[in-house]
Length: 84
Image 1 (spheres, one colour):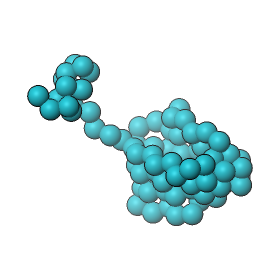
Image 2 (cartoon, rainbow, N blue to C red):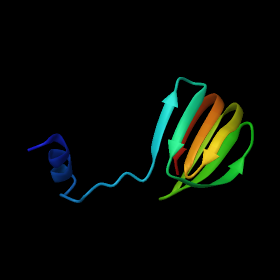
Image 3 (cartoon, helix red, strand yellow):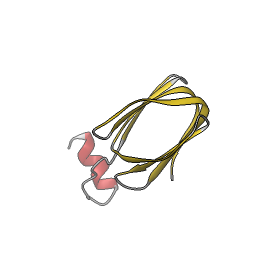
């Protein structure tokens, strides 16, 4: 049995399909896949609509470096991010 099959068995055998992906690069950048749209945007907080749910990123001097086809690159001092 493969690792992913074992994980699926633990969660009742349901197929798990990722709805978003976050790659945090230190504390100064993040790359997020699966973004539907930007809900709100300031230098201290960016809120996103995801495929399922929402996400909030907080920090200092935040700015959107790239936003295209569901991919978002954020730069600035990232203090926290959470799925809400």
